[in-house]
Length: 393
Image 1 (spheres, rainbow, N blue to C red):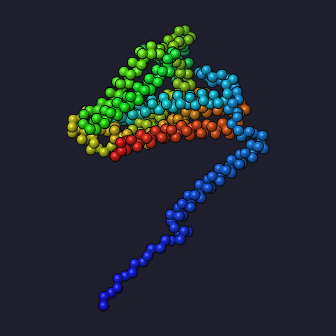
Image 2 (cartoon, rainbow, N blue to C red):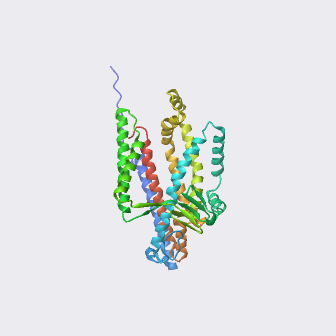
């Protein structure tokens, strides 16, 4: 008589209080509820204390007269607080955007220089990186303001570089364009030309993928951009006129003036962040498999071609996330302008509070603004990171 087949045990679902999936959801919901409850408690505590102190919790103060002076701007003391904060935001963006561009370019150059076969270049880059990144950024800012910018020659003895840039202890004067009546249509033409240039670059990339022919997308895109902008400039009758700065006694006429505080803050933040970006670039290049460089040498690519077409494109995939952190840092570190008197968002907020406006609401606006800027930078960094990920288009 044969043995009977073993009966299969039917799997029963565990009770809810032992189900891992249910417990995971319950714990997450409980955590969110606890955080919201804590925030509600803080808000209630703030409202109670504000009511007891006779403080207003509204944001109507934004319509009050600011009563503050903002250097190097056309802002008037009679304008509302809202306008003062907007001017501060614009100044912060001026520092952050230009600083990010400068730090990225210099960081890539110095990062590559750290791997140079030339001993002097390699050691000079290493000294630069190890010196600046180990000094607190606020010390670097104060040093460049007090020991560099303020020690430049006076306006009467200003240093002129090729007739384009004027250096003095009043700041930095650079060429600038003065717009006429048709400047807005011209800016629209420039924006449209930029979009067309991007489409041309994308078309060249697609053609390269299909045929294998060199895409030269940068050359084609830049050429289309310049041609369209030139055509728009001529058709609109020269809507923008370039003016060059010229020193005339105690005055500098033409161009645009970058105040000493702005110049010092921009230079200090750019050079300090460059030291960190250079290390990111160096580490990312070293992370590219050595076989890639050996393969580039095997097909007789020059050192520049190997770096441009083989190493850097792969290194960019590695360096994007840490680069985004440095961009966030340079944006937030701009608030250290308080120490040299540059009117960024944080300093103007301090002055607004000193004029009797409620501090909690002002600081809430400042924090929300910095948070928004950080989220925007993170968004673009994530988009770039996704585009550079292998297997995506």
